[in-house]
Image (cartoon, rainbow, N blue to C red; front, top):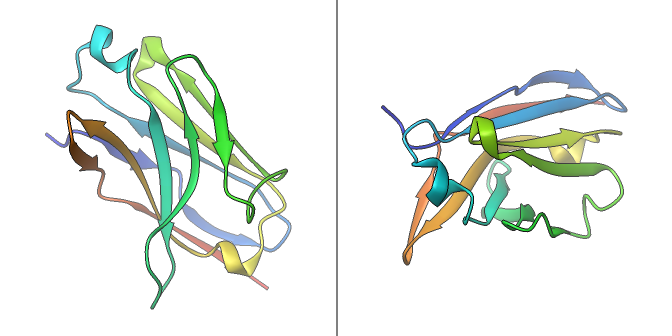
Amino acid sequence: QERLVESGGGLVQGGGSLRLSCKAPRMILSVYNTKTMNWYRQAPGKERESVASITSGRITNYSDAVKGRFTISRDNSKRTVYLQMNSLKPDDTGVYYCNYDDYGSPVWGQGTQVTVSS
């Protein structure tokens, strides 16, 4: 079983919205509650880039590219972090991954594809 499982990607027209989810089914809840959870994305032919993060205290941070359009949130009881994406643009197309640091080792999900048509 995967350590992180992303879902919610798909094809959407520009200006539309999607909500991504990332669940950590194997993580002990008390450990999950301490983790900063991150969303990254990778567009075709480009390096993976940070999109948003949320700390255990629910402090959020966003890249300039998505600030004001995307919202990261978490539901610790479900071991799930969300990425609400509004006003999507073709430049938002890519594979979206969630991530956390496991005592110095990054843990990644398998990713979910987001495609925004113009």
